[in-house]
Image (cartoon, rainbow, N blue to C red):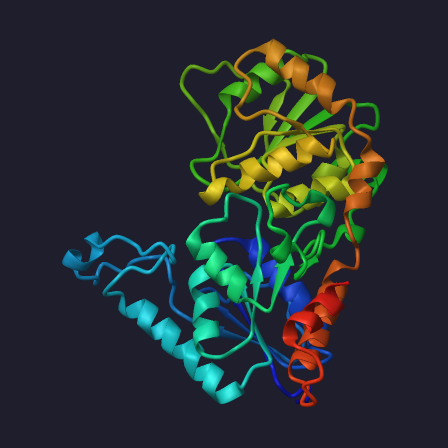
Length: 383
């Protein structure tokens, strides 16, 4: 085996966090071996290093309207999450990937995220790495992908692992806390405020509104802002207004911004959901943090919020506060957070270490002497 064998990487196209994670690892890997990224969108990646190519494939999740209606009523097998019948786009995507398998003889194939593609790689005799997320993922589909993988890549710290994660999965997991986020580029609080034109003595609560679903509801935010009339409440991202709310004068909606890390660095307190990207940005900055998890498949954010609460890294509410005292309780809890513990969770070299792990794993798995079983090799590299 030589390092001429490439590593393939499937990227879910609905989240820029997936693309940034993949790009950061691929750019580090490119110095060692070629990398091919597969994604339904080519425009979501940041700058890629020479040696990293992107192959566009059709979406595995979005129908075109050409699908035969009669085939859409068949239930999914327990071992799959998204395997509808009659989709020519899925057939085309799978054909592109399997043709690349045959042509490139890849050392590894990383799936971020798709249980089906992990199983496809195994059926095609290609060693695969599954990116593992928080959530209730002990179902047959996830377990088939995880059990058939030669390794697992977790984009969070080992300290934030779920209590119910089986040991046989943990022992083949590489933890990469903060991967995909350039946390070292975040400015200091003073520098961030100077850049944003915010007075040094102003007290700022920043609400980071995600893009999932219908947007963050504005009504509960108005209650929090109204309860602190001398504090500036600022939202960034998508906020959904409702007819019955009465916005106070200290609440500002900025919409989407290109520099969320700067806004987080400037804040005295942060309110947000807990997607990977947002969570890593807040933890890297070290801020009193109130988390309200959003709905996600397999309770991903709810499980992540429970872990953050367990570790004392965030004050968590399962739903948006409906009255001022609800906000006051969360404010008091957030004030007890040790911000240095938050910062210590982030590994600033996560991408470099993940790339090294993947490359070393590939080398050892494809060694020709056959001295050790692959299971022992994986355990050795993880340790």
